[in-house]
Image (cartoon, rainbow, N blue to C red; front, side, top):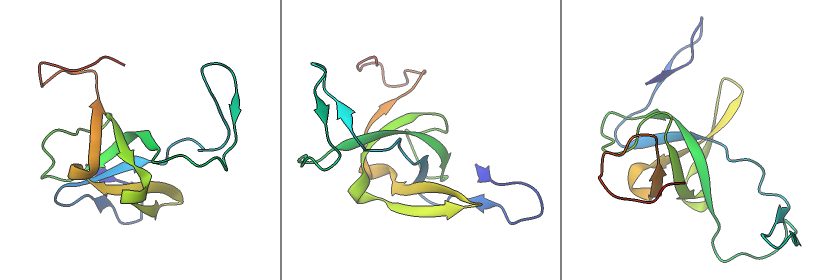
Length: 109
């Protein structure tokens, strides 16, 4: 998929790269019991869900529009036309949530 339109250059993802939107703020969170967890609280490794906006031609399972689970420490931040995105490899994705079910098994979110 190619990002961007108009007079500027287009961006095309290469190889197994996946471009996702920046996840919503990792600020204060609320537990199921209603307790407020401050943004400064230490969490072992917090994974993030985010929507895929572009994929390279060598990706096998991930498609544009899917929601993926990944570790934000394993990706790079990039700005495209004033918007901030995260760039990662397909192998760094831990889980996939999509409307389609190509794999025949899994959980529903």
